[in-house]
Structure formats: C-alpha cells, structure tokens
Length: 184
Image (tube, rainbow, N blue to C red; front, side, top):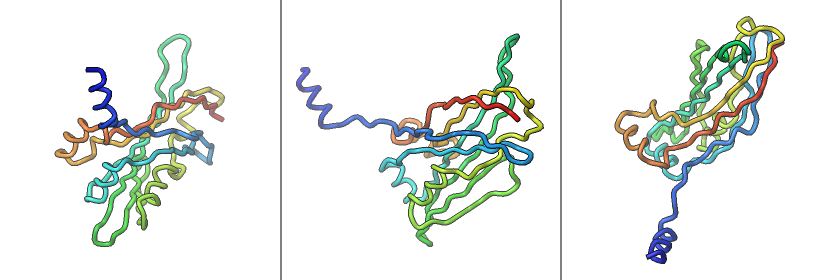
C-alpha cells in the first residue's frame, strides 16, 4: 500500500502555491510625505500566464500598515495604504498592459509592454508611492511598518473567483514583512 501511494505521489507532483518574496522595503522622506520604496521577487506559474493570455486581468495589491506602539494601551493603527497594479493582455495589439491604481492619488498610470516579464517588472519594482503625509505622524516617534503583496482574487470576474479560490495555481502572496521606521 505504501509503495502504491509513493508511486502516485511521484506521478502527480504536488502543486505548491507560488510565493512572493519581499526583497527590499523602506519608507523614504520627501517634501511633505513618506514614500514606499520596495521590490518583490516572484514568478507566475503556467496557469496564471495562460489566464493572462486568455484575456483575464491579474490584480496585484500591495498593502502597507503603520502602527505606533503604546505601553499603556493597544497599538495605535496610524495609517493604511494600498496600491493595485492591473496586468492584462490585449489580443488585438499583442501587447501587455499594466495600470497602477492608487486610491490616494487622483490619476492612474498605464503603460504598454511587449512581454509579460516587462509588464511584471512594474509589479516587482513599483514606483515610489505616497504612503502617508508627514503631518499624520508624530516627529521623533517610532512606527512599525507592515508590508505585503498579493494577487487580489476579489477583483477577478465572479465566475473566475470561484475557481481561483479552490485552485492553488491562483495563490500568490507574500508574508507580512515588518520593519521599524522613525518619523522625522
């Protein structure tokens, strides 16, 4: 029996969820705000690449949370920020499109690319985006910053959400990366 199970395991290798690695993350001070500088490392599996080629847009969401520790009470959640990058393929132009959506900015950035890897570079190394204004933080205080990036299944069309939730090919996310930041 054990030999049969081992044989089946070798014939059907386990499919593992792809992971995103946060390679670099820091907050940088600019004139009136703090911007996130981050880079991620990941590869799309064959199922996700096929989905993009078939016209399904993928949404990659980066979440940032700032909290201030307090000795007398629970930690204070100071600020949360989110940015989403939509990657899609246009069959007519045979180009990949990447559009950045940021709720805090008034506009959005959209670019076309010849290859999927070039479009994913915008996801892997996002432009420095405003996370928090300086006026919202107390100068000289330490803040805990938590950062993660994930494939956002909630933005897929409803029929695909049902399939994606039950399919390990569609699980792509990082663990929360934590670091300390001192406001100036």
